[in-house]
Length: 614
Image (cartoon, rainbow, N blue to C red; front, side, top):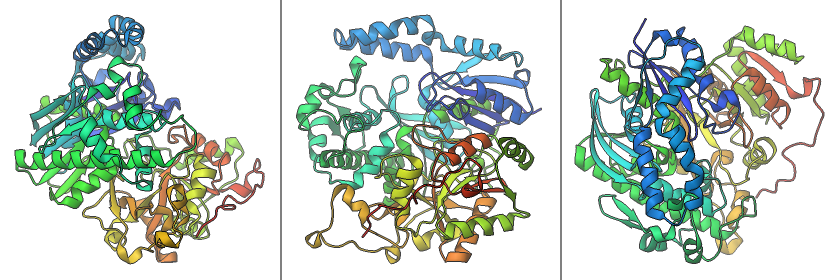
């Protein structure tokens, strides 16, 4: 039996479990996929069971358990914050203090009790690690680099909000730390809150909204809210923020600065929200780029590794790559707190003597981030037959790819369920909804009729890795959909000039910008996923079949879920989503289901209607 280390993240958001065998990630999953509670913060009991089952192990076989942060140190920060903000925040302090005194301060004891309650064997000592150490380990140790600069930027862990590390071999050396309350992640979250979105989940909406606006508030942010030095270090003017008191992110001073109260959630978006998003995005990119330059100067390394919630800002990542600060950038696909479970486990595993056996292969150790559960064709068939679903089975993988590519070329939207589930927030061709990127109606229609979400949200392209540079100005591979790059000039369609009636705001959605309009954002950018045949053979085969039929090696790829729900986990989750949305075809392994053939299906209006396009 290999040396097994179980890592856990819990009790804030995106709880997860990860299992490492001799330093190699073998299983990892977020609890939300099992519980069906979006961003589930609870103890990841289902994820733990899955990880152990995947390895054919019990807790008796586990050498160590790691926890992704230090609860005692976090308690000191929380206590100091409330005392420093007093008398403001008294109500929040009164509500949270009993939890801290009863169990949060000794979370590792709580974790041990939860593991014992699973009845899966003896529970080893639970070892807490620092929050940013877990992020840094998740970024560097699975990366393909022998040595690299490591940059971690998020909201806050215990005290740290931004850290710089030098990774060499199996060691991480801390070089720089910025501390709470001065946080780039919390600055971005403040604007997320002010624009009417939910903190810790709506930040990507702000990133997607930014190209619809102009950064007219950027100078105001720089002069009033954040003082940024040339090395990327910064301080926030806390008079404009309310998160120290623990209730809300912004208050009256912030409202006065930006001309009125925050947007009411779900109310119509205005030009102010577009411009606020563009402004905070511009400032964030500037700070991240300065931090990257400092990382290069301090370490002398040619490679950079990124983790922390801000590393999910694909536009900022693209800026680093475009600037050529490093030869190559590797981003942990589960860059947020879920990835902390993996990072903490890797930290303990390497301290116990494991090595980074993947080095020298040219690949990372994440297995394409396909570290979650899989279902056999037999398990899928048993479920479908029991549900009374009408399905056919492709005889070969080639037949499957050809059949599905044909339906996609005809304009069908396909739910695609293959192999092991992704670890992290991105669907990478295992639990995806796919469409034809050449269809001008696809982006708005999929948002409104299938995902049931805001029409402005962009979709990502999956492209065969060998074709990527023919379609996108991409400086390196992007297997985890964490880099934004411009669409190649040869594929663009320039919009009309403003004096010819060019629309603004959400009206920009009506303008076709490229030959693949469904994956081209309003600024000619795209959040690209490059698909490698060795890492994702089934998905790559589908892209190849679509290219053979259409000449286009790209598909629209969005996560297989609807707004407010986690990505699907089981065949049942997928079939349920299929039947309650405008998805036309469902593919589960080699089984193909047409919506029109299902006994419970009722014909509705075509989901492409009533969408005006130029």
